[in-house]
Amino acid sequence: MININSLKPIAMKYFSNKMRITFLILAVSVNLLLGQSNKEIKQIDHTEFTLLKTINLNGESDQIEVNIPISNRKIALSLTISSSVWAGELTIEVYDPTGEKLGNYSVGSKKSIQTNKAVTEPTKNDSVRGQITKSVEFPMTGDWKVLIIPKNAKGTLDIKSNQSSVN
Image (cartoon, rainbow, N blue to C red; front, side):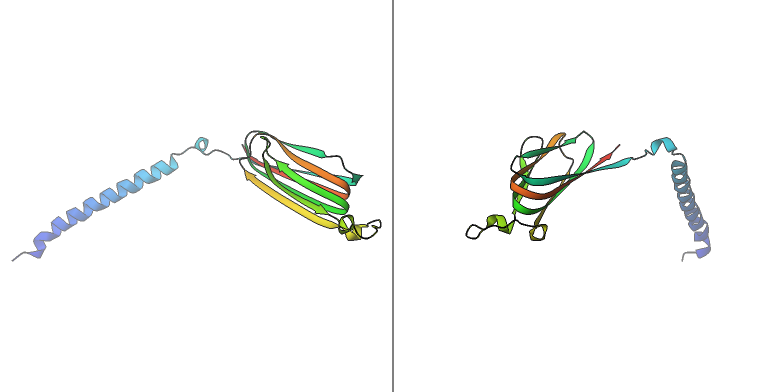
């Protein structure tokens, strides 16, 4: 028969060793955490730049090109192009620096499309609105292009670009 009293010193020694190892691990962990200096923590600087350009269209048909320069270190580019046309037609195209078309839309006033009836002078109450939003993460460096193609267009156009960067 096993004497329980003879096992107590062995169990206490085993428990004591476990406690020593646990305290050692805890002490090393606390030392590592407290030993880190502020030099290892790097400050992150986040910057956003927003530009809003408004173009008034007064019946012209000449193409307008708007360049949006993107420098290196940009992490996001967002373009929002909104238009309101009350006469004529308007096409908007967005290109990246390589010349690849990334999106487009066209709007035209109802009165400018009518062909069977006499067209009276349109008003702002008869306007048609359109909008395109393009978001690109880590955009290519270079000049992004918004091409505006009016056909006797009267109205307004807003181009909003938002660029984000991290330094």
